[in-house]
Image 1: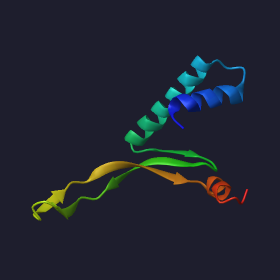
Image 2 (image 1 turned 90 degrees about the vertical axis):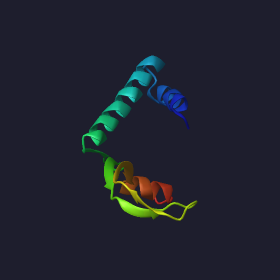
Image 3 (image 1 turned 45 degrees about the horizontal axis):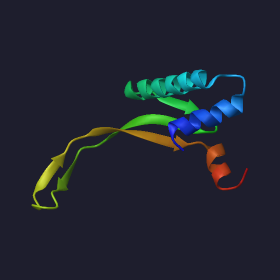
Image 4 (image 1 turned 60 degrees about the vertical axis):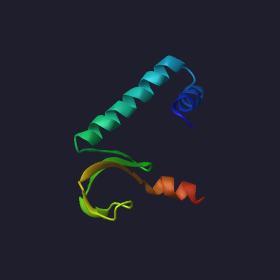
Length: 94
């Protein structure tokens, strides 16, 4: 499902809100999650999961073409930790 399809489904689900308003809310939510992660915070939605940013340690790698060792710098990557309710739902337990 892409963002446009999500907005359509959400508009159907909530009923009385315009598609334009739903699109603004989805955009706002994504911006808030991104800004929070960028500043080192975490957005936790009980039962669903948590969005956070982790720093992946730097390491030594090997260039596959030249076989030379290269240093791979640390990098910040987005992470999602699913909540128990989401996991149980996907496993068919709920």
